[in-house]
Length: 218
Image 1: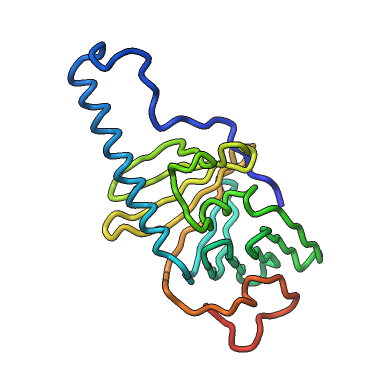
Image 2: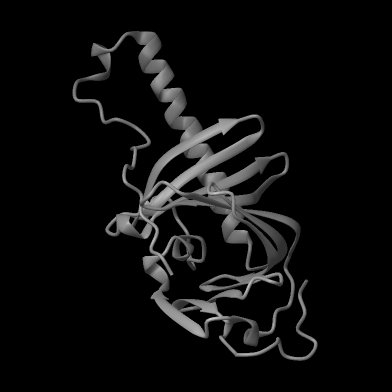
């Protein structure tokens, strides 16, 4: 699997070199309001993600190259996820708690990456905190009832830039996007989302062949 890379990461805020009094009052108030808004958004996103222990969904994946695919997802925090693509795609992606496993059944190829070296490692953390020094929040945006948060691994920028996209009413994870070193963006949009579901742990292992009997989660 290709490693995703972000060429440029923007800070959420620029540190002020001088005292606040050096800036016009309106500018200082504007910066304070922006900081408060950002922190409110991050706290809300943290609380929402922490509340998700298990989830199933259908997903649509679209790339800026024009490639499209659909499939079914199962997620269990911490550390476990399964993205099973609809036929004719031969691709399966499984996070088993330690590795992100990329399977191409047509080519009979299996690749393992340490989960924490991938953007998925951020989403699947046991205690996700945007204040964690291991995570860099690059930017936050709010527009048209949608909140976006750009995040990356602080010490491994080559792992990629992940954008988490939430609806505001209700506040819920709806999409994530990943940008690679060439600037190619891949978006995974969720629908038919169910949370708090019972999931068989065999879903999060790479077991060649079809799912175990009775383990359809579509």
